[in-house]
Amino acid sequence: MRNFLANNQEELVSRCKSKVALRPRRAATEHQLANGIPLFLEQLIRTLAAEEDDKPAESVRISGPSGGDSLALSEMGMTATAHGKELLKLGYTVDQVVHDYGDLCQAITDLAFERNAPFAIGEFRTLNRCLDNAIADAVTEFSFQRDTQIARQQSLDATERFGFLVHELRNALGTATLAIHALELGNMTVGGATGSVLKRSLSSMATLISGALAEVRSGAPELRQTFSVALLIKDAETAAQLVASAAGCAFEVSPVDSLLAIRGNRELLLAALANLLQNAFKFTHPHTDIALKAYELGEHVLIEVEDHCGGLPPGIAAKMFAPFNQHSHDRSGLGLGLSIARQSVEADFGTLTVRDVPGTGCVFTISLPRHSLQ
Image (cartoon, rainbow, N blue to C red; front, side, top):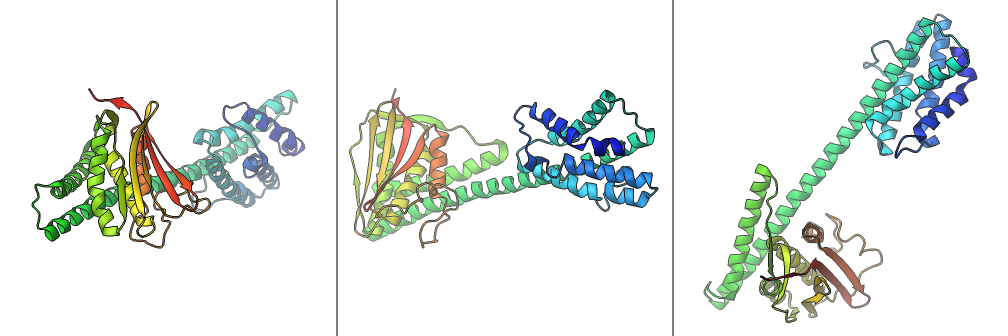
């Protein structure tokens, strides 16, 4: 078998590549096979040579003992481990790890049959031992790396969800604090417009906490409804006026058609709009104005927030919706506002985009399917 493998090494590798290429969504490359079949063949040949020369210790060092080499990886085990790790990076599944070595076994037996090359029972035993060890080590590493990858992604997802909750609670608390401050300064009652802002902020916090509890118990609840765009804008305006006063900026809101409606999670869409407005107040130049308008365009409703931040630096527009991404020296936030806003809008089949107005500012646009009020 040793001579047969050495004399037909290139042919066997070629047959393995051909088998791999026939599988769906699987392209064989030299890079992918670098730690796989070619190295395994070379190590198998050396293992057989060591056994022919009656060097059992050398055979075990190269390819490991029967039953695996869990205590200390053999040379073959280390290359198989690298191969399993590489296949995961290339986006393949665990069955491909097994198939790669199975292809070689099939190629060896097919070619031996074609050329009438008989093998001794002991040589078959060595081949099976090497295949068994290589597959076990490759699959073990593949599974370990995959599990690590999944655990890391789950941790990131959990962090982002927690960040969403904290961010929205802080926004609602900040608005409630501004409302209380305004009520105290003006010696006003809670029955007016400012009191309504306070009540709505407290209600938002209660909704966020209830939603988080519901998600823990049984998954995110379905809270979609059809509602008036004009009333949504009015609620956003009332809360934003407090922020505008604190920031020393002018806030302009265009009239909205009372018949316009959209469908979605109203609380989350209102929070998304609040995030866009807070972002605008944070970055716009002092004593400039922020504009909010909503209008119909075909089968969609567009809600726009325009600021005077001076325009966006090159390349920023493509990155600014990424979570935990901050674009100013002010690190008081979490860098989640725009990411949360986009997720909320997309959850209701809409889009959130930004358009740069060089030298002036930028315009954030929420686009949602238009509905009618019944």
